[in-house]
Length: 96
Image 1: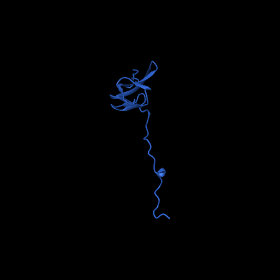
Image 2 (image 1 turned 60 degrees about the horizontal axis):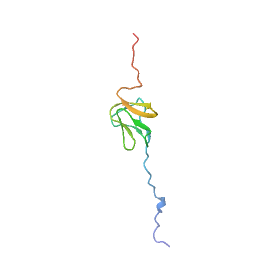
Image 3 (image 1 turned 60 degrees about the vertical axis):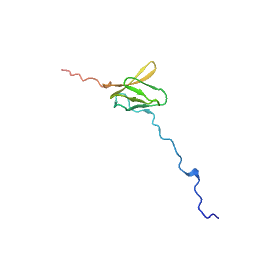
């Protein structure tokens, strides 16, 4: 008969899991962004940087100036820009 209680098996201990990697679009077209805001987290070059945008070494696209997000397609590639004016708003014209 054992004098001490047996220790729990290592299989019963909590397993370490990787942290959640939140891939995807973080800011959509027309949304306001500040300098340094992440616009897209991706694996590989699905989206490409345009004006006022840089790409990180893990292919994260982020803004380098304040403005509004804009998406455009050119030759089969999707480019992301940060524009100073919101492209989705139309100027108000009075009818006087």
